[in-house]
Amino acid sequence: MKRVYVNEKWCLGCHLCEYNCAFSNSGGRDMATTLMGVNIRPNIRVEEGEGVCYAVSCRHCEDPLCVKGCIGGALSIEDGVIEIDKSKCIHCYTCIVMCPYGAVMPSEDGAVQKCELCVKTKKGTPACVAGCPNGAIVFEER
Amino acid sequence: MKYVIIGNGPAAIGAIEGIRKKDKKGAITLISKEPHHTYSRPLISYLLLGKTDEERMKYRPDGFYKDNGVDVMLGVTAESIDPVRQTVKTDKGKVPYDRLLIAAGSRPFIPPMKGFDAVEKKYSFMTLDDAKALSEALTPETRVLIIGAGLIGLKCAEGISGLCGHIAVVDLADRILSSILDREAAAVVEKSLREHGMEFYLSDSVEEFKGGRARLKSGKTIEFDVLVTAVGVKANISLVKDAGGACERGIIVNDHMETTVTNVYAAGDCAQGTDCVTGQSRILALMPNAYMQGECAGRNMAGEPGAFDRAMAQNAIGFFGLHMVTAGAYEGEVYFERGEGLYKKLFYRDDRLMGYIIIGDIRRAGIYTAMIRDRTPLSGIDFELICKDPSLLPFGKKRRAEMLGGVKN
Image (cartoon, rainbow over all chains, first blue to last red; front, side, top):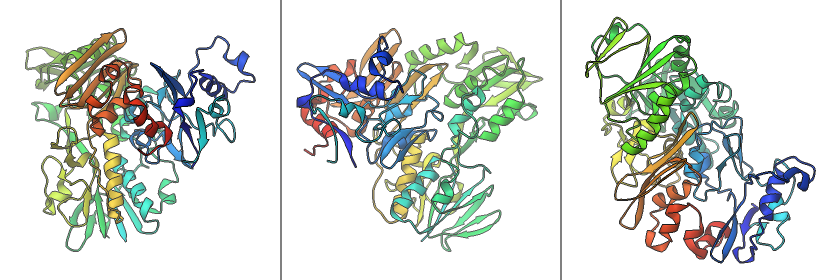
């Protein structure tokens, strides 16, 4: 299955993936007016340290601990993609305790949010990868 | 192959999903005392809070049993097992099995209390039916007394907080949530709950119930209209115990979820396995654990060997928007950080992270959980950095290439 993989050495730390993610999930028409002045809450986050940067998003594990741990049955695997049904999430955050990557996070409304490979918003390559200027994240089989 | 599963909670569902990964054809029969489609028990407090409803509480979709070829016997009680003939005796007849899973959960434990039997309105808080019955007994004036300031008692308290007039909680322990919080952390949460109008009587217990009053050991009295007992639970072990299987507080299982009775497995709140952090044999009555034990049992029942040897304490819970996460064992040296909206204790020993308690900013706590579960050597990472902020930075490029780049080093 195709997943988002990180080529750490190519990451510029530009945070464009975060903006493209937030825009893709916003339902807005154009990025500038949708995100202007907004404190974005993307499902992919760039981590930066001394001389390194890279983006972290859900790994869509084959054996996902978040799904197994979900106490409400709100997380499920659909064709390999781990999806969240926000209407079933009761904000207990067990999935946050389970995820080894820190890739599941509380959203503004309290339900958890996570990368769903843009399956609910667009077809094909996820927005973060499509907009990465340097191939630091790729969508492929490995 | 004929599989029989007793129970309908996460361990049972995990077993069905585990079996079907390997065996698409074998007959699965599920026997459950409760007459409901599989639902998430911890959600009963959210049901009373109005944050969910019976439809959304379903742990799996309506079509789950049919899609997985499961013959469901709901409202049926398993009474005993015959390990020689390999049959389960129920109140509706005998059911034969080749592989049997006991995922029978637990039931409320009610300590002997003087005058208890004469209390008119008394409830437990374990099942959907318990929650419905309790909510029907409440009016905006009702004074509720809850015995037990653990996870169940306090979740109940939060759930009914908008439905009743007053809540008092009594617990024998010197702090609330004593199974998951240390004294300092418990004080943080207790303060928040008091601000929501709850009253606590700690290091105390009921001496006698009489005429709508509870007289405590300390001499204090509490007037109440409705009583909820949430002292603790007892594992349902009798099916295996009566069949001669090894039991302590729970049904003893190995890392493959096998009991000592041939072809009989156990998982979830009735099972007692090994805590991977402490090495102790104990019941870890937590949903993630129940699911993973059940799944492991299912796979093994279907003939695919594989151990589940990563059971550990791990909790995520919140009260009135104050979130807390805990994991592992609270042993060893302590990293402590306290600030606005954060209470954080990390426990470490012998080059390993042993456990944590975090209240408030719980983001990315799973990175700590994974370190406990994987026994990540602390000498191999930037420990100081990860104490302050859980991220993947402290693991270094090579490990990150595995985690994020799909590289197998």
